[in-house]
Image (cartoon, rainbow, N blue to C red; front, side, top):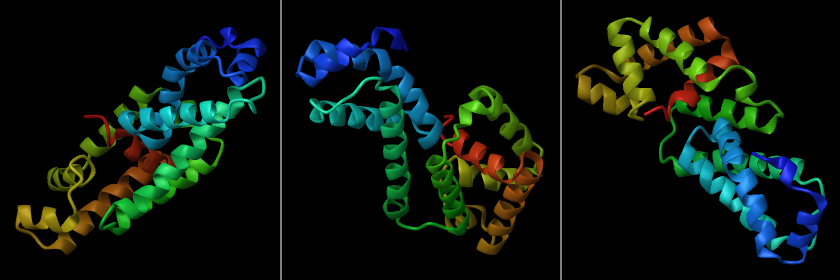
Length: 199
């Protein structure tokens, strides 16, 4: 991001409806805001949609923008990320208790002024979670990876593995408890969310 290019004149020009000024703002901030949004929604494609929605809103609100605009953009992205997370609650047809917990922590995190990128670099976060997951027993790891990475429900995993759904739930709970124990409750859940889009 080259925010130094964004001066008061550019914001005034956007307020006057000058598309070239809007393009400068978009080019300067798009990649940065996408990276920022991804740290909340953990899905790069959805993050792009969020950021584009923010810019559409900027253009529709031209005439009422003020300088500096950085905080306004960041807050707009954060609010839209929160809306996206809340929409997941209704978009998912069936939310089991563990997926519900993941979404609840993700929503709470988005409502605060924290940012996962302030904890560690993304690759380091992924490595930490992957190391903890790989320390699980083979069966527990297999079930948890199907649950986390493939998005399978406990019932679907039980059917595929020819085991009871209660056994699946025990393995998922054990995996989540182990991750919370190793990485901390909130951080562990956030890191789980973060790596869901790794593939």
